[in-house]
Length: 134
Image 1 (tube, rainbow, N blue to C red):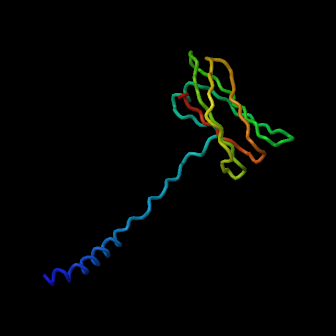
Image 2: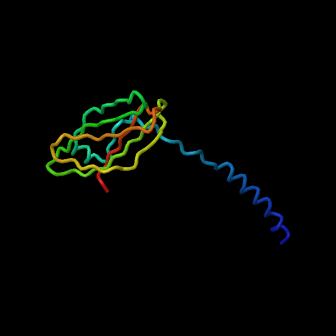
Image 3: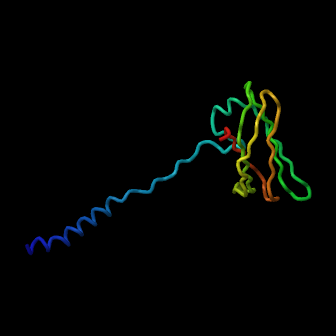
């Protein structure tokens, strides 16, 4: 009985040493091979059912507020119910402000646009996310 009690501390030390040797490395993130686009679609289906043109940007000369307008059109034969949100970024690419999801109905084959503006003059760029309405 005495030998068994004496071997417990030795066994504990052996187990702790074994655990230290089996430490796994941290899981590293993967580099995204795709550059961030200004306009992103939540699904390929939505992308296929719309046509967009290049966004136009303008800045208010007094306030410096950035205004964005994206021409968009539903290419199918039915109304398209979408949600969108803008994220405005500073000159370093850091997010400044993101709008809530906003709703829009696109009529078939009719030219339309999505518009948004920053809240301050620090905005230098934007991202627009599009999804089907929920």
